[in-house]
Length: 582
Image 1: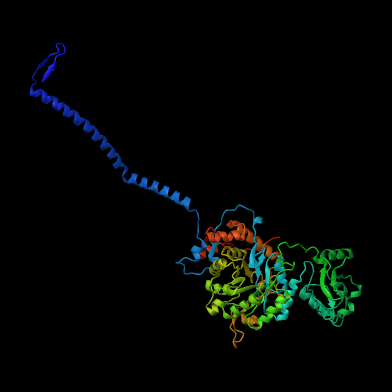
Image 2 (image 1 turned 45 degrees about the vertical axis):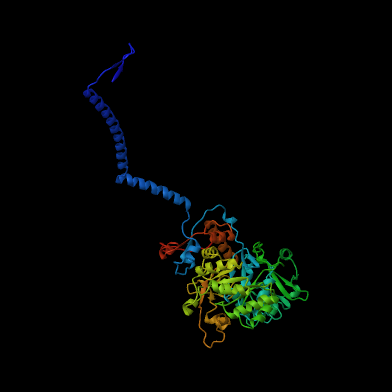
């Protein structure tokens, strides 16, 4: 190699021995190998750490963290418990029919007071209700007294069809002519009635004073008034007649027809009267105002009234050709709606009479039924009905499902029919299976516009019939199904297509129910329970309730038999049930 000498600037060639070159080369190779070893060590340590993270303990922790993250994300997406009504009733896996007791509504969020709940709903396309409760057209439930009471409370009553045409027309007219505070149908007596007979009448009805008219009927000429004061301490009660002891009409203070209630009440106060008869110019009795009712009179802001201010009322008919004359008479009397009363509504007989009514009286509200399937409902909707009545064989006194093996569980029927009817703007009435305010809540939660009640209202003061006492002293009233033999004998067999049959097959029973007091106190209890139920669900109105139903926001669960037992009173030796306290 040539080596430069700096001092001289000359180059001198020198020779290096091969052993020295080998040493230098080996040193360079060692340095390179050391660097590579360091790098490989770092990689090895990294791999070792990675391997440690794949140990069973480390892998389990990693999987747990991932699951927690997934569950949190899923919980944030779906916070709804239970199932939607669509999932329960329309699932391809469902093979069962469900009743009200099979279901429970899950609570929602409360953002309002119970007093803010609005119960406005519809009986039919043309009739709105403030209280979604309808009294059933049964001969032990609805005549004019019940229809008046229901209309005053914001619902509506349906006069049953087990009456002659004239009698049913009179029932309708008494509702339409009703004025709050006036007794439009006082019990009248003949002047020839004996005091003994009068005593029996007093014991039977509980009243002490009666108007005396020529024929003992309302609307005839008033002759006088007989009170307890007139008949006390008199002997020979079997031979003494009312006409001999009554206060004669000439000595009475009277009010003329058309008097306002406030003016009539003022006359009673000023004259210190017990009763004030209201008569026509010809002296015929048209109403009575009683002093005992002064403290009971109240305004009814929820009352169901027509455009003329009269209470609204519905009436039931059959499907016989003669029922067309009944319809004409009822319309002339001012009826607001007609219900075609049939246990199985999808018949050619009902189709024909519905089409005839809608053609003859286009403004008349017509309710078809009963139906429990979507196909049945579709057929009646095509005929032009303004509402549908849903239910078959589920009433407490009905044996149709047992005898005929035909019908449907009520919750399933209400949901399926209501969903179809809603698409056509047709309200439905959930008829039957209701024994508590909670059942009304469930009926509305499944799409009903109102609940039609029979047994729930049976036993109230306004129902037809007399009270009697059981052996243990319990006060009772008779209640029977329209398919019972007793009711069929009075004409309701047409409802079951049996009017021409030699043998009548019962599809109902007769029984008795306990006294429930007056509808004027009982219905407000039902309404308050209904409002509390809707508040718990988180629905401020029935319309909002239906929105939640069809949007899938209203959630339900199915209840096992044990859950149903748990949801009622249990675990007590004995208890007393008080429905409400004023």
